[in-house]
Every structure is written in C-alpha cells, then in structure tokens.
Amino acid sequence: KNLLVTFHQNKDGGEIELLKSLERYKAGMLLYADCFKKLKQSGKEIKLESIKKTELNVLSQEEKEEIANELWDITIANRPFINEKEEIENRKKEFFSSIENVDSDFYVLKYEGSIMAFCSITPDENGDLYLESVNTESEVKGTMIGSDFLPSVLEKIKSLGKDIYGHVNTKNPMALPYYERMGFEIKKIEENGVLKYYEIRIPTHKIIKESV
Image (cartoon, rainbow, N blue to C red):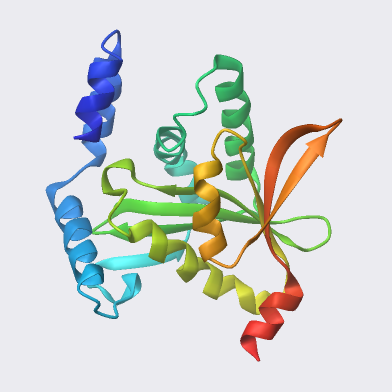
C-alpha cells in the first residue's frame, strides 16, 4: 500500500523505484510482520530473535559492502523529510562512510534472509557509541518490529558500559517519543540560537544503574 501511494505521488520516473522496492518485498516477510503485530497486541511476551527463521546479526565488512545499496534504499525510504538534492547527497555520503568504516557495526534483523530492520553503531574518539541509521523496512512499519528491534540491539551493547548517543534531524521530531521510550534523554543542540539537531543519549551512569 505504501509503495502504491508513493508511486502515485511521484509518477514521473517512479516506475524504476517502484520495481526496485517490490524486489525487496516477499509475501512471507509481510505475513511475518502482520503475525508479529497481532501477537504483540494480544499481550504475548515474544522476542524477535525467538521466532523461527529470524536472525539478528552484526554484518561482516564484506557483507556490509555487498548489500550497501539495499541498505541505502531502505535508509532514504525511511526519511521522506530529506527531499532536497544536496541534503540527500550529504546523507548518502555519511551513510557510505559508515559502510566503509571497519569499526562501524551494522546490526541487521532478517527473516528468511529478507532485511526487516537495521542500525549502525560506531565508537567515537572517546569510546562512546554513536547510534545511526535506525531503519525499519518501510512496508513493515507500524507492525511493532521497530519497537522491539532497537531494544534488542541496545541490550547487546549496554554491557560495554559506554554512553550510547545519536542525532535526530530537526525535520523529524516525531521520532523523539520513540527514543524516549527506549530510555534516551533528549537535548536540543543549537548554534547561534538556531536549532541544529536533537541529541539523544543514554549516559553511562544510567546504564550502570539499570544493570544493578
């Protein structure tokens, strides 16, 4: 449905993008997402990784480079608010820089080999962990997969005992409540009185307190 709406809004030259997106979608993936949502809504305690044929792994450098274009397609599809050519090119440059960075870990959730969600974690010069490219495949948005994916990743990296932080585009304030539910603190970063971006952060002391 989301694909058809996008195609209708961008008819000029949209056929190629529509076909590229359709290649990523499989009936099994959509059925899986729908079933997961219904199970969560029923109140059942269920974790993504406990479902058969589901895996949450860190990609090797070779795997990152092999599926980089597919990951980028999902990334830009998740960011309709980035619509100016220069802004898209800058974001693309940042994204592929993370792909090339051997220290950037890409956590990818797959079902039957199809990508459902992913994000990247990169240590900065202080050793803190920079969270970037949090994405859910557009056609499974609203199925609660994204709400379970990030907590699953956070559980894996909290044991490192480092601050976990990221940046949220000023055009995407709707994402802030999602990160607050995950335990992130929100801070406005301004320059000369102008809002540049939102910083989201789980400080080390908070992680230690949770683990005690």
